[in-house]
Amino acid sequence: MEAVSSDVFISDVDKERFGFKTARVVGLTSSSLPVVLDFCVREKVKLLIARSDMSDLNAVQSMEKQGFLLMDTLVYYHLRLVKHAVPADHGVVLVRPVRVGEEEEVLSVARISFRGYCGHYHADPRLDKGKCDEAYVDWARKAYVSRQPENFLVGEINGKIVSFGVLRTNSPEEGEMFLGGIHPDFQGQGIYRSFLCKGMAWCLSKKAEKMVISTQLKNIPVQKVLVKLGFEIFRGYYTCHKWFD
Ligand SMILES: CC(C)(COP(=O)(O)OP(=O)(O)OC[C@H]1O[C@@H](n2cnc3c(N)ncnc32)[C@H](O)[C@@H]1OP(=O)(O)O)[C@@H](O)C(=O)NCCC(=O)NCCS
Image (cartoon, rainbow, N blue to C red; front, side):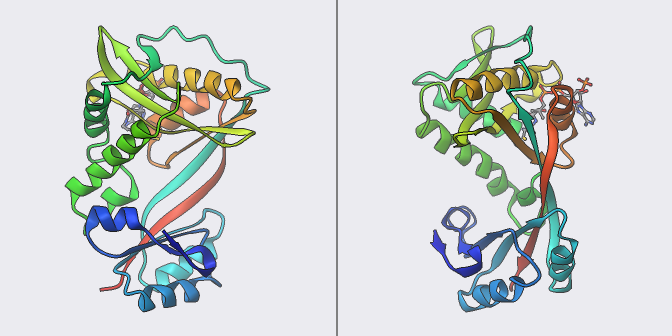
């Protein structure tokens, strides 16, 4: 990835996926917008994926004036683990670290659980839906390949993998479950809660005092589970796309 001033960069991952030059920027403001647009024109970028802070309406309105379209709103929740004991989990699923040789089984769960997902890729009518679906599978594949002991969890029922969740530490204080999905046939049984409980224990094992989860504002099932476990919202971003052709 090529970083330049105002933190806009060419996204190799998106270029590889969609086949054209894509740039990304997080924390776009109305004052950095002209520099970012100049960069995209100079670099012959076709698509810009820009995130601005949820509280910065000036930024998003400036983007609207330049023809950006809102694609999703990302919300961040956290839980202070020092204040909350890990709840008892009497779920229907056995949550355990993934094993060698389970890659294909896990990826098939990632593929079906993220098909037609409610993120910014799928919200853009100009992006190929099949490639949008594959974005999440690729993400899961990369996480599987670079996994550490115990950070890539799977949920097993009757010997079959029905769900997965991947954890990382963002800093010594903060852990995150950054990717997770439940096979549609097994949704609605509290499996995501079981993953969060295991994730909380994992964060504590890393001495992280806080656990973070981000999701789309319209992903109500995730937020219902988070709120019931005591997670609180603390940050959000609008994700906008601008096409230059
Ligand atoms: C989102 C997801 C992880 C939730 O996991 P789950 O174990 O199936 O969770 P549940 O189905 O038990 O739903 C949790 C809650 O949301 C509710 N819910 C489900 N769908 C809903 C909807 N469309 N509108 C409102 N509430 C909904 C459920 O009733 C439940 O609430 P309850 O406990 O009060 O009954 C799972 O549906 C999934 O994998 N989705 C696709 C991928 C994804 O979104 N991953 C997470 C990215 S952050």
